[in-house]
Length: 546
Image (tube, rainbow, N blue to C red; front, side, top):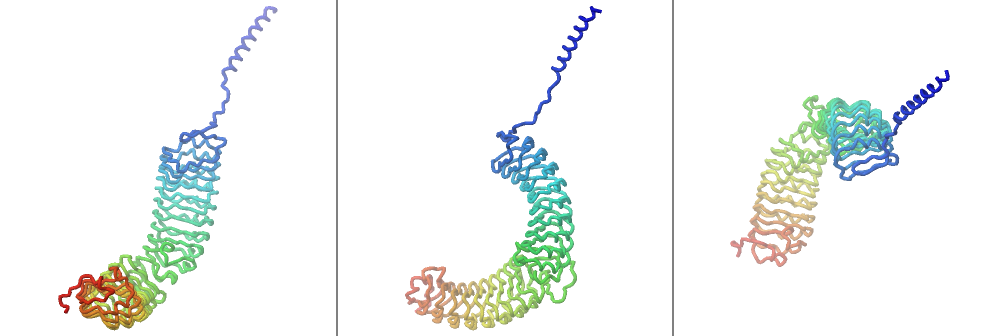
């Protein structure tokens, strides 16, 4: 039995030795969380880096996934670099972020769904990249967002209904992508929005009536989509709107009268535009002529009290101004224009209108402003123009008008501005032009007028400009020209004027030496010349002079 004790001691020592060896081989638990992160050659402390602003640093390459280790970041700004590649999903680790700005880079790929982890974000801007794919539904997790800007990318698919969770948003800008599908009605939950821009996408369906809940909206842009249906009457709830842009869609039906509850500047196209839709009359009185082009081919027939001009309906009672200048109008001026008897302004300038000026224009006796210049109008000036006795501004220049200037022009005694230049007018300058005592500018140049300058021109004592050059006028310059003491521009060049220049011309206060102010060259005027002009008469054919 005694011999057993030494054996037990040996066995205990062997066991103890083995247990020690085993303990030595057990791996210890090691914390491998990095304490530093290297980004674009700079080292950042994980613990102390809370803000990272590298905007405009000319950074290149992709966003390193290691950026997701800076878990204490609250502010990340990389805008205005040349970053490429995708947004790394590791960005979703930065759950303390309140501000994320990656705009104006060359980022590609999808918006990672992990972005929905950043529930503290208040500001998210990814605009001006080359991002593709859909807007992830996880964006609806970012319930603290006040600013979301994804414009100028190549995003596709529909606007996720989860966007309606972002009830703190004040700005939502998704314009200039390739978004399709409907505008989700959940957008009506975003009652703090002040700006909503969805234009230049491929959105379809109707404008949801829930848009009327967005009573804080100042800007609403839905233009250049494929929206159909009518404008919802609830649009009238948006009483602080300053911009409403619905142009270039396929909207139909009548415009709701509630639109007149808005405090818009309907006459300024950048503030209000519904052009290029299929909206039908009758139109609300507040809009009047500010509709632009509408395809009314599917509308009912012309309602009573309206006039159809170039496929647009205009209210006879409410249309006081018609500004259709420089919009590509073709064809003739419809005689029905004469039914708009409340018109005070009519602008059809710089179009491609042909045919004659309809005599019915003489019915527009309230007109104060008529501009038809820069078309291809032919025929004569109708005598009925003399009915427009309230006119202060008349321009028919740069057309192909023929015939004589009607004597009835002398009825327009309120005229301040008369421009008939660059036509093919013939005949005499009517002496009745002397009745236009309020004229300050008279342009009859570049026609084929004949006869003498009427002495009655001397009655126009308020004239500051008299252009009669490049006609076929004959006879002498009337001495009454000296009455026009307010003239600063007198051009009679390139006619066939003869005789002596009257001494009374020196009563004028012209800059004789400036050919842009005074020009009588290329006539047949005879010496002796008045001293004020003798050095400035230019070329004269004196072969028939004494």
